[in-house]
Length: 223
Image 1 (tube, rainbow, N blue to C red):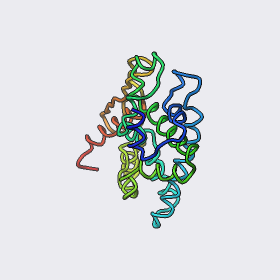
Image 2: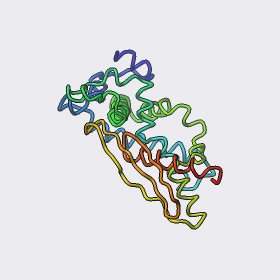
Image 3: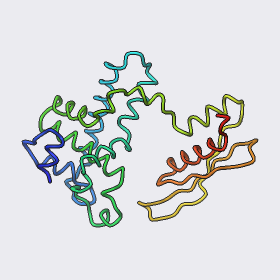
Image 4: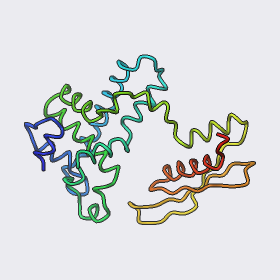
């Protein structure tokens, strides 16, 4: 499994123990990936910023920040981890295994950052930078596309502001499930509209996005 992962990474470790540590969650062992995650996060953020600075000449600071945030966000890293099938070889404690930790975005994203740091410690900054570019892959082809994909909450807020209307109010209506597998139901209401919408998600943020999208759908074709 480790050999196959190294082929997918395009990098062979001189010290395979670094890779093992990068794949070890704190629930499994005291020698885990928390410190590697800290270092890998910094390397990833720098490389994303450096790439954007040199390849997206017509973007201002705010736009560059949005593009970088999209490239390094938890969901992006979890998607990369699933492509590498990291969930199959993570070292987790029994509690995390029982609660599905190998599929959780946060744990998968942390493992990707840990792997980046492990490559840096094993092979140096140039190897780590090359790895980051391979992992981000096609996401770097046209990073400016993220500027065209405003999320539902942003689109709803901009529409309401453009109409001189009150901003939306989001409220948690219901939470269910265990701590690590909670589901949220959130309502979205706007003063002067006689309806509200609801959204569901594995986090409050995701539920709010769903609620905003549902509210926008009721406004169509106005928006």
